[in-house]
Image (cartoon, rainbow, N blue to C red; front, top):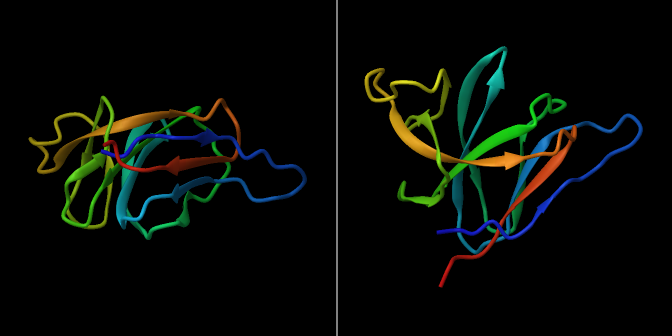
Length: 132
């Protein structure tokens, strides 16, 4: 299971683009899904494939939610970063509106990790090494 080593707010000034970036600081390729409130309804999106020591902008607009939710798997689909918030995912690329009744709606229930962005408009989340 990946541990969340460092969470860092990357503050910007001026007209720089705001975003939620995930950096994979492991030696493994990971597949990442994110969840957030979009227009009053939770929405999950996936998948971003992030190579070892790579970063990907997964939300490219200014953050409007304090909390962003992340879930990651290895290349075999096994969870390597999870939390306690149940949200829906699919095996292939997806956008899913709503997080209730995943199985009944034909989706897969996954446990997302809640990331507190401290109401910043730009945030970088770091995936770090494996637990021993």
